[in-house]
Amino acid sequence: MPRMTHAAPAQKVVASTLASAVATIVVWAMNTYALEPDMPDYIVGAVLTVCTAISGYLTPPARRDTIADA
Image (spheres, helix red, strand yellow):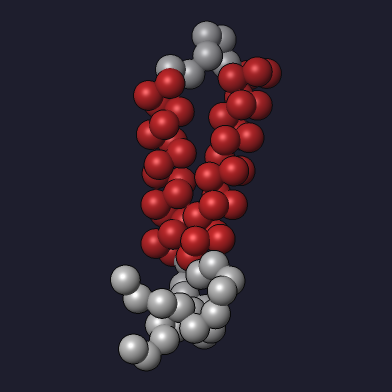
């Protein structure tokens, strides 16, 4: 497994994590305040998966996100 040159997480990982957290809060708010009945669990999972994948794909890698030479 490749090793990064620093201990901080990659920029793509941070962006995907934040997108998942924001999507979770949005889905919770919609289920609590806007939707009747609540969204099914499989739809919530799909929304979170798509948000995470899109944010990870669209976020460019940072300059510091390099792999250390072996």
